[in-house]
Amino acid sequence: MNGGKKRPSGYTIIEVMIVLAVSGLMFAIAANFISGKQARTSFTVSTHEMNSRVQSIIDQVQNGQFSDVSFGCTIQAGKLSIDSGAGVGQGQHPNCVFFGKFLHVSLGGSSDTKKYEVFTIGGSNGAVNYTSATPITPYTAGASPLELTTFSSTPQGVDVTNVKVTVGVVTQTTWGIGFLQDITASGTGTGRVVLAYVPAPTFTNKEAESTAATAIETNLLIADSAEICMTDGTRYAVIQLGTNGANQTTANLKVLATGTTC
Image (cartoon, rainbow, N blue to C red):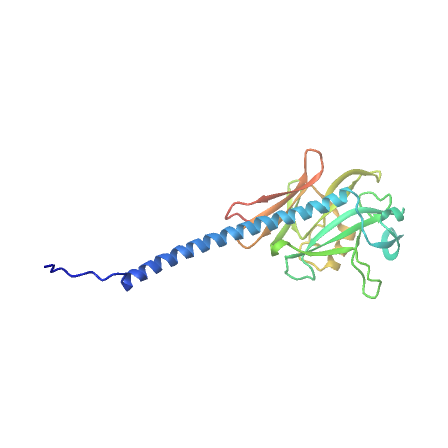
């Protein structure tokens, strides 16, 4: 005769609750890991894309790409004047010369650092040291809607926290960086691209496009190097702008270590 008690088959409620709690914890850990990995991957991809865009601007200046839009070009009081006349590119306008392009972060005077514009900078032929540098802005109210400026958003909404330029041993923050064809003292091109900026206090905030353009007309200077800082709120990366061994300006991405800002 068996006097022992028979154990009920299956699991008790307490055992089931323990299993569910452990499973839930493991799921939360796995989900957090996957989410973090996806965020890191997204940030890496978006910053590499922004670096490629900046390098493309440099390449366009290097190759002398002016504009694909028809326009007219004249010189008035030593300054470039653009209208919607016939002709394409500087080759149709011997009195005008293409200097380069300028990247300006944040539009409309807002705090939106996920937007930027790129506009062309031209001037009079034979100019020395960009003395006739003139931004070719989108259009003036009441005038022909001539569009020679591109407006873009940063890849996957990364923020550009600042643009820093260095001249000698001095570094300052700005909200734009230019890429110009190098001009010698005689007014001829050297075939390389140099960095340009607008010094404080005229171009240190997130100005509207019209304000940025006005600042460039009288304050365009040459920088030795520059950095464009980006973040997703957690991670940071820097596009480092400078010359390589071939004395050409390049854009190189550097993702910063966790906990490091720029």
